[in-house]
Image 1 (cartoon, helix red, strand yellow):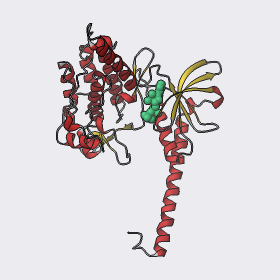
Image 2: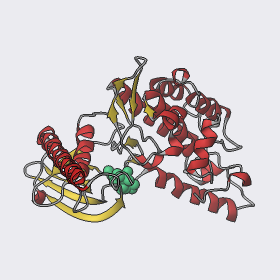
Image 3: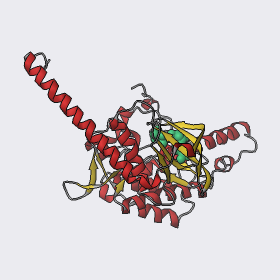
Image 4: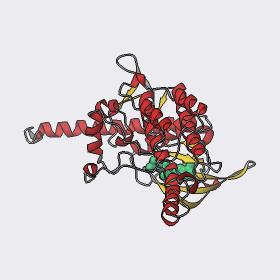
Length: 354
Ligand code: ADP
């Protein structure tokens, strides 16, 4: 309607101005890409050194495959190769490489490691350490199936769920502690992850957790009241079920919103990968959290699980514990968490149609 109200010469003028802006944006993104490549110089590997194998999964940027990396004089090792799908915009290529830059700058035993980057002869490939058990959500859900089957078929000699699923409280608590330690490290580096959840964690061959997916991570900036926070202006997709009230209401992210998400991750751990908020639609979750709600807990959640998540889900961000405090809490209570699968069904919430 606005365009119709503008005279044809003015329209041509605006179109040219827009084209110039787009061209500038493209140049800036290409420049950004070149800067990212410069930052990744130490990680560059030739395509001939990489032998792609079976697919591990598909993500936002494209397919992730297992690959054998052969480096002259340094032997060979299996890695996970993340490929950028073809015909992407410079903006997406820049974002893809920026994630690699972020991971390259982080060094922690519970954060996935960057192994290499390949930008020669074809679409870019990012090589990361291979996590033997894949992502944490699938790892947990595979165990829940096992638990449910045992529960159904073995009524007579009913074994406690956690034994049947081979997921001890000790292991669940350790996984939560490892996530907290990765977040405490990020906090010390001034990085906010902004997308903490089981699907974004990996499990290696030693069943140790590695925080991954730094696509939404940002360095913190100082907000209006002097508190470090990040206000998102650009991103269209939000992980609503893991977001703190202030992120949902104002698009503000901080170390404290990562701690809220850590609480939701704890819930995913104890329910062995159940969807937070059951069948509530994202829109309903938004209203529910705005009205003061937080994720419902399973009926058989232990008192220590309840105490921990309720601390992480305090409305006022300043009252939430730091990730380092959550880490200390779990270190002092190595069996604080236990599998809790008695999830209350609430018919009123079954409105996931949106
Ligand atoms: P997204 O972009 O959707 O967050 P990714 O592209 O990072 O997801 O990964 C897609 C899937 O590939 C993951 O869910 C996981 O199953 C698998 N995957 C990713 N990275 C690794 C890795 N380093 N080791 C093993 N599996 C991986």
